Length: 86
Image 1: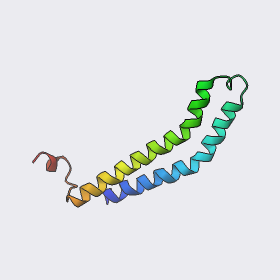
Image 2 (image 1 turned 90 degrees about the vertical axis):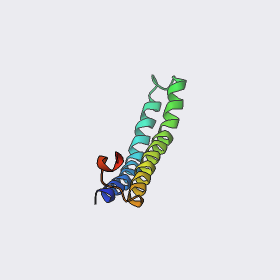
Image 3 (image 1 turned 135 degrees about the vertical axis):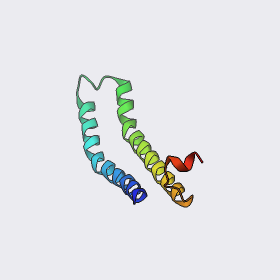
């Protein structure tokens, strides 16, 4: 049951990130539209790459969570620390 919750949580994380992406993009557009902030070239580059980096990071974390749970299920794990130290 615990493993299924972790996998469900990973999928829920992707859904949450997909739901928040439009809000994040509109906020970043607001920041770049400000006259005082728009002059910074490095900030523009960071804002351009931020959504892609967040998606890659989230997909990597979710992939790792699912991979570790599937690996633990296949090995018959789930015993916690007692199984690791034998």
